[in-house]
Image (cartoon, rainbow over all chains, first blue to last red; front, side, top):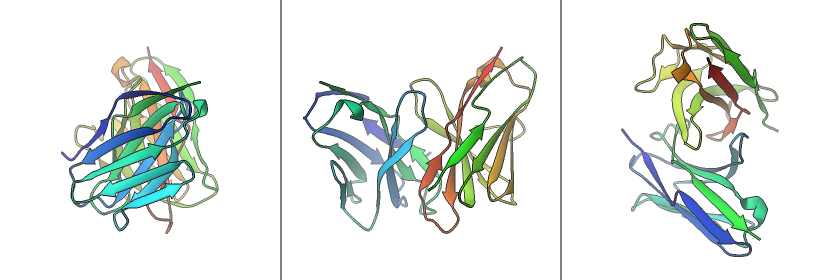
Length: 113
Length: 116
């Protein structure tokens, strides 16, 4: 079936550095790509999303880029802080229904002071 | 806001019993609710998509007779794990999409199930 690949599985950066997480998807009909942050034992929280009609979106220290031709999208976190430490999941809509999502396997980000 | 609650937050049961988990959208009406399963340090695996007033759509490999889903109103969906076994132990988490609110899914806090 269709799936979403996410890399790296773990990422360790120093406070203040940038972090980049990359995802690829296989369903050419996917048109919605959210990113979620999940802290240990808590629910996933939407941090940013992008739709297929744009190539880039930014919200303060967080940005997402989308390349529909290559079927990949990336999350960029600048000026990382220790509180950014969490597991980050990318997701792609299943088809263009815009609702059901396929999730990547997650990236465990550790920001060290 | 967009708050989703789940009840119970954790449950321990004996093998063979059935467990019901509720998912509620507290301050909005949800066209669609989703049920996921998450094993420790793993991703969220979509189990089924639930639309109010209709039968749930199950993902491949998910037994619909094992995981019964009822979506009786625009604010409530329930997942019943029937005849639970130890291998059903997991973190079950629901999400809801707003009526006429686009694709964004809002997640509940999850229910941790342990079957002894």
